[in-house]
Length: 178
Image (cartoon, rainbow, N blue to C red; front, side):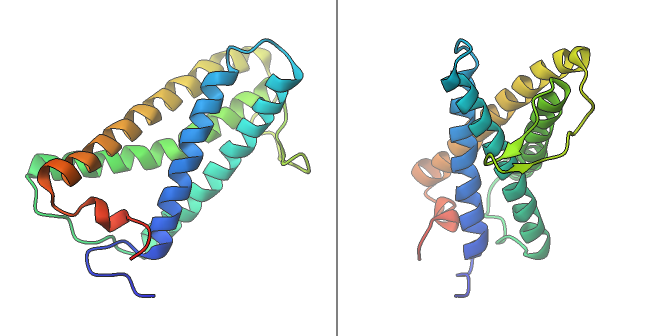
């Protein structure tokens, strides 16, 4: 199936929505689990959150590789400041797609809680176990996650503004289906 003019490729669209769903769910789970008392439920959610982080990291790598090999559709006619804001927001999103899970992995490793992907595949420690280092890294995972959440909200708000106010078809470029 060839992409329609002005639309992203089907692969880019699927990767976009898979990553979007994974990030939103992972953020919500991370927010919820952080205040739970130590319990089997909390440990289960932490493991799920780690698995989601590794999955987000892999999807981000696939998405970036796809993006490097496939040009996006041409920019819509919009003021220069909006184009600049969109480009810088996308760059920051890509940076955070990698930074948030990598810092989370570093925290988990430093705290001495290895990541065993789906309970089967042990991943190597990202940094050596070090309690003091884990205490330094932990807040950065949260700060970066909140920065990512903020950019996601801005990204969605911009897309909705283009759809409902400008009515310029921007949102349809990333819509699933034809």
